[in-house]
Each structure stands twice: as structure tokens, then as C-alpha cells.
Image 1 (cartoon, rainbow, N blue to C red):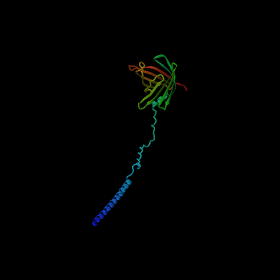
Image 2: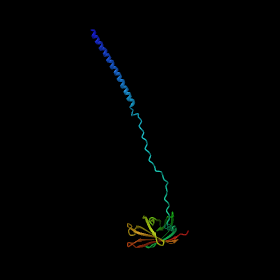
Image 3: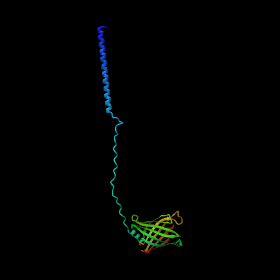
Image 4: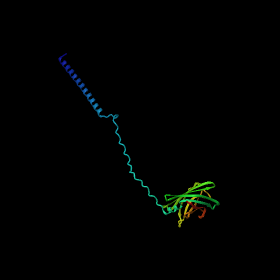
Length: 230
């Protein structure tokens, strides 16, 4: 082999070795760079599986109005009508008769008590045909309606009688209007009227009347009351 050829071969081998070394070095540097970038990426990207959730602040409790002291309404003031009713308070005996049967006679007792000076409650007791009869009547006065008000019920019937009434000019008789089953046909309604007349502090008269078709009134029952002696 000629020296020139040998020189050329030597140069080629040297260049090949140099090129191979440079490529290897570049590969090493490239791999190191990639590893560094991967490490940086891993360190800066959070692992969502390990990140604690952000706590949501609790909702604010509704604001409650400050409680106010309860103030009961002032008590009602008794009127002269309420005072009139207080005359009926006490223990009474009575005898009841009716125009529909001359032989009918019913005797019993009545106990009347006051409720707060505004109302009265009357409880009656008697015997009819060997059977006890009880009745309850309450009466008051409504200043707003300017009328006496009340109810009646007893153990012989299911109807609740509701009263509205007024005093006469002499202030001795209280007339109470009401409605209830008709005598002739219980499926129909008739107008009735009960009257309480104070004859003196120890005697009173209760009468019951029914309105006729022509508008007139027929008294069908009356009860004489006498205040019981203490």
C-alpha cells in the first residue's frame, strides 16, 4: 500500500472515530437533558390523587329575629249588660209547664255561676219519665255586636241552640232569638224565642215561644224559678 493511501485511510479512521465519539457524547448529553426535563416535569405537576380537596366554608346560619316579650291583651271590661246577667247567679228551683199538654209538669233545680264577670253558665237538672235530664245554658254580651249572645244544649236532643238577644226598655226582660228544628217537620227550621224575666231578686220566669207562619208568636212553655234559700 502506498503511503498516500495509508494516510488517507488513517485520516478516514480518525475522522470516523471522532464522529462516533461526538455522536455518543451527543446521545449522552441528550439523554441527560431528557432525564432532567422529566424530573422537572414530575416535580412541578401535582399528583391529583394525593392533593387534599379544598374545604367548602359552611353556609351562614339564618338570622333569627330577636324574641319580643309576649304582651297579653288587656282584660275585657264588664258593661252594664254583663252586670245585669250577674243577677241570675245562684241556686234556683223551678217548675215547668206547657200549653201543649195540661198534665205535663216538670220540677228541677238550676245552678248558675259567673265566669269572670262577663259570662254566666247555667246547669239544670230534672227527671222526666224516670229519666234524668240535664241542660246547659251560657250567656254573655258582645259589645262589638251590641247584642247578648249564648247557647243552649241538653241531654234530650242533639241540636245546639245559638242565642242573640236584647233587654227591654224596662231592663227586666231579656229576649233571646234562636232557630231550630220545626215541631211539625224536624227536617225544617223554625224560629223560636226564649225570654228571661226578672220579677224580683228571688223570682224569675222563663218562657219559650215559636213563630207562626203569619209571623205571630205562640208561647208553648214556661218555667217559674224561685231562688233557693241558703
